[in-house]
Amino acid sequence: MSVYVTMRIFSPRANPSWQLTPEQERAFTAWYEKASQSEKRFVDGGGTLPLQKQPPVGYRGFDVSIDGGRPVRLAPGDFLGFLGSPDGAGDAIDQWLFRTNAGTLGDRFGLDVGVTRLRARRIRGLPTSCSTAQLTCGNVPFPGHGTFWDLENGDPQHPELGTSLTNTCYNYAVDVPSRHTRMPTLNGRDPTEWSAREVRTGLEQDQLRFAGCELPNACPSDPTGTYIASCIHVTGPHDVKGDLHFLRLDRDGVWSQKFDTDPISNIDDAAPRRPMRDLCTAELTIGLLFVGFFEVTDRTRRHLRQHGSPFFGPRVGNLRDIRVGDG
Image (tube, rainbow, N blue to C red):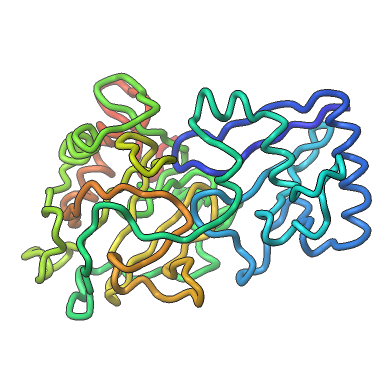
């Protein structure tokens, strides 16, 4: 028997994965058999949770694959805590799974078990208010659910657009889908921790214009233009480097995002959850450090479709692949 665990926390950086020890495998499979019989709606069996139960951005639980089978998707402790953990210690199952690899998760990724205890907070570095009440910019609406952005198998009528598994938060933010998953890179190297300067350099190479750290009070002069918010996913309150995350301003004046392979969303994680019309007061369960607002237009999108992205993806000759319809 083999049991592999993937912690779902990063985007678009690869999520950490590891194999349980034989003793841990026996404990987990015994728990899983019992949990499956008692409460199937929380042990998801590889599909997706109902929309109202979708985990928020940031830490989103674990995927567990038993003997190479389709991963079982376990939601955060809020949904599983009452089931207990395999060793009977009282932890939620996700906290128990974290502890099976706590050393590596701490040393390599700077994570501790506290990340499994969800808490919504504002994006660090944003001004106190950045309402978009008067901003209805560009030609990109919120696509809604059931599109290729959400679907693991994509749209059979348009396979060139890829699927929820191949399109990252960056693809979604700039509205340029890809059939192949691309990870961030800069000048031929793949840093695991990004600084604000590196993020700005990469985006400007992709021909996104820096619009400042204050949300402009008017839409871009190009009628196809809108704004994206660039952030760094940090694990500590004083960290200044980390993974990447992007949100985009849709035509209706609400911000939306795609996190890793999860469904797209335009609501935050506050209680009660609300549309992200004011990004500065939105609360998310992911620690984000704000980098800046950037302008993206159809000219930017054409450039990315025709030439690829210097910011994302492995080299393909002199190009990098974020193109539609590539083979």
